Image (cartoon, rainbow, N blue to C red; front, side):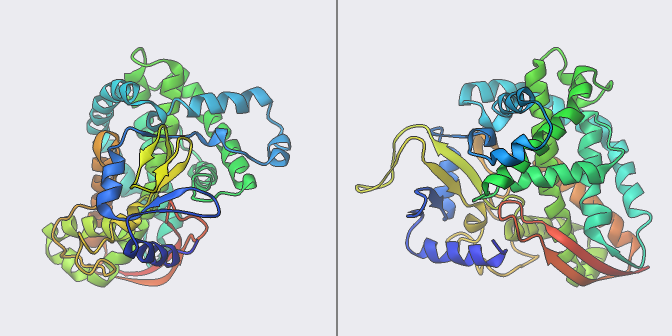
Length: 382
C-alpha cells in the first residue's frame, strides 16, 4: 500500500463510523481516535504470533534450516511481551521496564558517542537512511541489549524482512521470509542471551527471567526499536529541513515539532489484535472470537474530532493526544528512548549544518504498518 492511499481510505471509512468489517476477509478496522483508544485498553483482544499464520512451504523448505529451529521460533515468538495475557504481561513488564530504564541511564554516554560517530562524518550531499536512520538504531539497541553489531546492514536486512511479515496483508512468501528472518535474528541473539555482556539489559535480566523470555524480549526490543526508529528519524529530518532556521534559533521548538512528527507520520500505522471472546459493537454487529482487529493508529492520529486540520503538518501544534506509542498497560516501552534519540540526532545536525534541504525522498511503500523511507538524500551547508 502506498503511503497516502490507505489514509484517505480510512478517512472515508471514518465518515461512516468508527468500526468497519472488511467483506472479503472478515477482519475489522477501527479508524477513529476514541474507538482505537478504547480497544487499546480492551483485554478481550489478544495477539497472534506470525508463526501461527499460513506461510509458504516452498520458501521454508528451501532455506536449509532444520524444522526444529523453525518450531522453536514459534514458541519464542509466543513469549514476546505483547503476546502474553494480561497478568503475565504485567508480571514480566514489572521486571523488564525498570531494568530497561536503568540500562538506558547507564548507557547514555555510550549512546551519545554512537550518535556522534554517525553524525560526525556526514557532509555535503548524503542519504539519511543508509548513513543514519537505518544503522544507528540497530547499533543503539544492540548496545543496550549487549549484542554485537559489526554488520548493522545485515541485521537491518533481517529486521526489514521481519517487519514486512507484520504488515496488514502479508503474502505467504512474505510471511515465510519473515519467519526465516526471525530464525536468523535468534541465531544472532541466542549466544549473548546465554552469556550476556556485563551491565547490559540481558545481563540485568539474567536470573530474573528464564532464557526463553530473555530471548523473546531481546528479539522484540530489537525489532521494535529499529523498525520504528528508522521511520521516526527519517521523517523527522525530512520535516525538519523546511523549518531548519527555527530549530537552530529556538531549542524549545524541537519538542512540539517531534510530537507533530509522531502524530502526522507515526511510527506504527496499525497494530493487530485477535478477539479472545465476543465483543459486541452494536445491536447488529459482534466481533467473534478469532477474528482479527486492526487498530489503525495512523487514522486515529488524523481524526478531525481530536486534531484541527489533521492532514496538515503544523510544527507549532499544541501537545495533543496522539497514539503513536499506543496507550494503556501495553504502552511502548521505548517511547522515552525514541524521543531522546531523535531529539539528540536533530540537536547534533542543527549545530553541525546551517542549512539542510531535501534533494530526493522515497517512501518504502511495500509496508503500511512500518512506514519508513527507502531513501532520503539531503544537501547540507556547514
